[in-house]
Length: 172
Image (cartoon, rainbow, N blue to C red; front, side, top):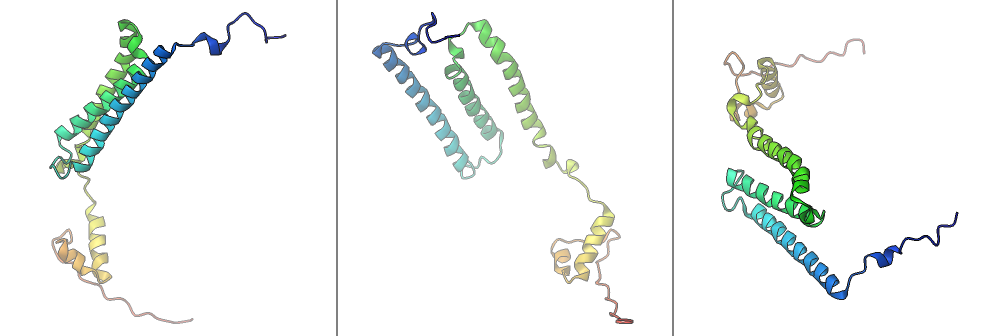
C-alpha cells in the first residue's frame, strides 16, 4: 500500500500561525517562564534565610511553602497542560480529585509530621539493652560517656568496670 499521497494535509502546514499569532504565543510563554522563575526564586530565598528570620519549621513557613508550591503546580496545569482553555466542568473533573488528594497529603504532613516530637511518642529502649550499653562503656574505658550523659544502671547504681580474666595459653 502506498501512503505517500493520502488525502490528509501535511502536518507541517496544518497549524501554521501568522507572525502576529506566533509573537503572542512566544510572549505568553516568556510570561509563564518569568512567573515560574519568580516563584522559584522566592522559595529559594525564603528557604535559605528561614533560620536567620527565626522561621524554623513553624506553621507560617510550612504554609508559605505549600501555597507557593501549589501556585506553581496550578500554573503548570493551567498553562502547559492547556487546562485554562477548557470548560469549567472539565476543569473540575480533572482538578477536584487531585485537589482532594493534595489536601489529604498536606493534612498528613502537617498533623502526623510532628508525631515524634511529643515525648510520649518517643521510642523507649529496653532497660536490659541500656544496662548492657552502660556496662560496655565502663568495661572498655568509656565511663566518661556514662558520666557526661548521666547514665546509670536500671537499679540506679553506677556501672563498674569488670576485671578481665587473665589470658591462659594452655594447650597452645
